[in-house]
Image (cartoon, rainbow, N blue to C red):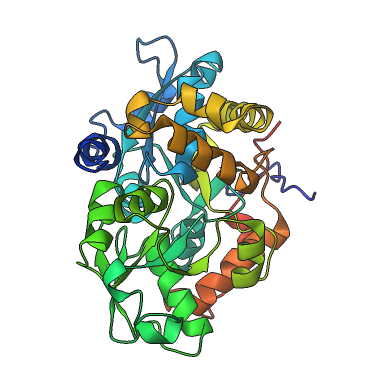
Length: 359
């Protein structure tokens, strides 16, 4: 696979019900607070905790698309690399991006597409290790509408829940509508977050449909007593090919400002190595073994279901952390369709990601 390298001078801009819900309220209502220490200083200095301090903002830590970021901490792989990583749990990828742009975090565990969006805004952000080959999203119909919403066209004039406006869930809605011959604005969107808030919004009919991720989809199914109606699903390689026409669509990744990467190349290598080791560990272990290493509260009181969902989603995770040209091109095409801020603007993909820091 072709890897991007950086010129020498100047260096390239690197780039049951109530009990379960009660448990899930703690598990899935992820709402973090940005770190107080200036990231530029913490990344370069010793935090006193035994390694270089790095603050990572996560776009919804309980969502399984970001599982490798948390699992690396649980397995001690950041510490093994000499890093003291502080994971800040934020609700929605756009919020995690905003925290990094604002200087509250060093690195974001968010979706790769944000690097394209920011280049369109003349800001240089670069992803440096890929965690997932699919976005893991599904467009789920609220139970009250299962008889009336049977296709994308039925979403016209409806209200669709997303984690946060501008997040990948929002872009997914707009892409699907546009691809189906509609306007991205034909359905309105409402922020429902992730976890218990998203599950409740769909179950109670506060939204007509919603873009959801695991484990929220499985939790919803248990709450309503049957599998929810889904009209678009990229949780499997087959679904990914059907929706995006590609075998890879890089989503969850670690990305940072290009100037941070230029100033902290060794730290970036260590982070990438920790994620790569985690991805290999996931590949070598079962859903039950992986679930057992995750924070207990993440299972929401149903460890068996949690392990099963992890096992099912393993097939969409990267095994080596690399970005492929096919994958990044597929994401760009999605953005051109779904995001007017990208549209036909000239985008240099080579400045949105790099494999330079991978082993």
